Image (tube, rainbow, N blue to C red):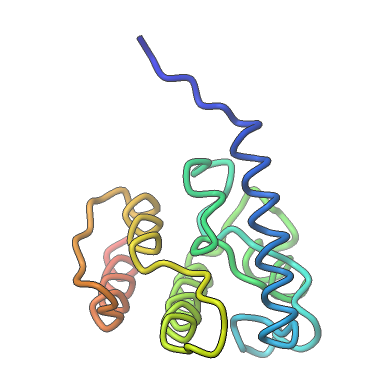
Length: 154
């Protein structure tokens, strides 16, 4: 018996997660991009799936797979030439590293609500990289090395 993926369920959960991240980012990060580069000026109105929703529906609702970006970052860098079915892999690496930083900040800052989970981020990386990762809790140095090595090898 094969398992049928309920795409509409994932879509619904993904939409909820995007709305939640936008609200959180506006409230606690003044609505700025989670990744600061030359394209990161202005409000971060786009909630981008680092690993594409259509390829990875099972992690599409994870806040750890979503990153708040400006429209310019989203539509010229993450998706070259506004082609949302395509991903810029070099930019994807930068976004994963930025997301790791935002997750670490969130886990360390006791003055704000903790919305991210280290284990969820490891699940996102394991799924996106098609491997099984075992990383000690909150070992962000190892996470950064895993991300760097993945993009060096692929």
